[in-house]
Amino acid sequence: MENSQNNEHNNDQLYAVINKLIMIIVVLIIGVISIPIFIYYSNQPEKVNDNVSSTSVSTPSKEIAYWTAPDINNITDPKLKASVSYGKEFICSYIKIFRP
Image (cartoon, rainbow, N blue to C red; front, side):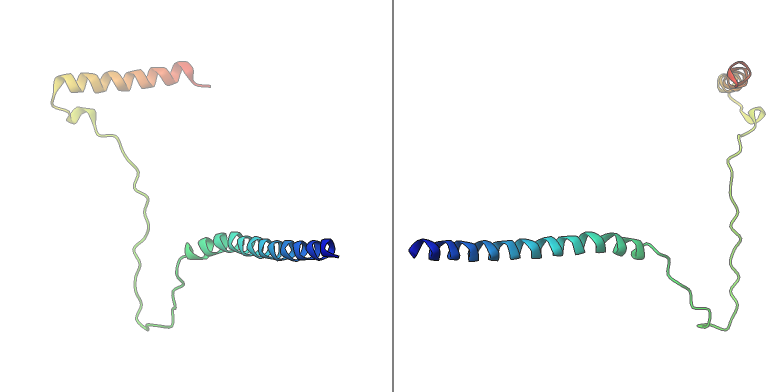
């Protein structure tokens, strides 16, 4: 009699622990799912409401600024000019030799 009551008490304790673990797992799953959704929506740009102002605002055009190499003839230091000229010739000859 006492043995069956002990078993029932142990089973009740196990059920309580299992229920707590299931709740923890559910909370963790919801957290894991909600974090990427939150990050996705927080990185979205804000929507502009066009009806707010009646004045037209001109937006500057987006131009891509590419780097252009400076002219070698504008270099005044003779050692630097020779070094830059050598580098240019080296790159050009390397491309001619090793191009696919």
